[in-house]
Image 1 (tube, rainbow, N blue to C red):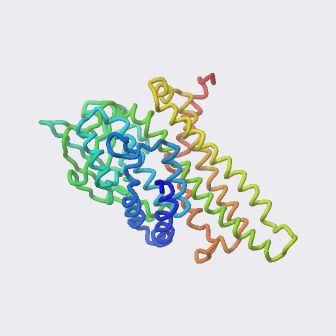
Image 2 (cartoon, rainbow, N blue to C red):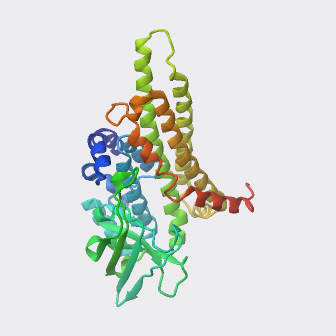
Image 3 (cartoon, rainbow, N blue to C red):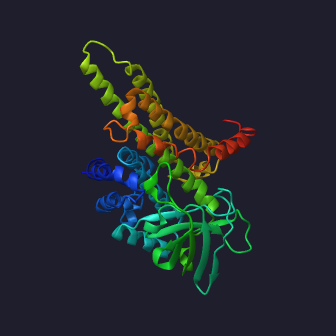
Length: 383
């Protein structure tokens, strides 16, 4: 049995069983993460030469989409983890120490968290206030993050910061901070409308570790070549997965209504057709860009394309379309099902799906993304 089949089977079963409690209690989906560890899914993005599965973007997106139908929070944790592993695997391979860490990740199925936000940057992940300092072969890094992705449960965190205290705010690097090399002090709460199980409040990080855990190169390259495309494609796949689950419930409801009155078409059937068409378009969008990314990632010419304005616009458009389209699809599912979709204790409830997809437009604000696209379109010529 392949990994995607394991996720669609055992892992989805575990996630489904605990999803409502994870949402209700705003607690971390530890049962799902344990199942992912047992399936060796946390090393899916690690290159085969280091013992991982070497999965491409399309395979990783398929995993996130499958899991999202069961538990959006679990899928978001998996997606964020894949993004961090990809940054290490694609930008840390020249470092013997980071290669060894990836081998350890395969052996122990470490979970990687993310800390890119910061007090004082107004949500701009390409700007940092904090800076890493290097002395006698070690680094020191302290950061005050507004949100930190499930960092209390992660075995290590990838942290953005300025290259050195004298560096400009945009001259950033990524630093791998192991749990044993840091202390975390929670500074805010995580009582949110949706994605409650991602457990990502603000934290004050204080850390010191081996200087070799500062990733080679600039975060500008890591961001353009890896973090942005992995984020937008994997997020789009999981938002689609959540919406697909809502449409599936709507389909079950409409078919149930049809059985009550044989020979007639239930009132919600037309809306179900509309939701299905929109869902298909969303799926084709992220699938196509996942396949395109996998091709581009193979060579130097492709890496240049990942830095291009045209590719940046594709990523921006994917993110905006997926984050706005998924809640619309779930809303249509709610209208089809009616009050049974509105009730939390109904088998047709889409309340959690609705709330989870509403987070999509806020994860890197759509207003910020549209503003950047508008600036690029003033000078971009599609070739």
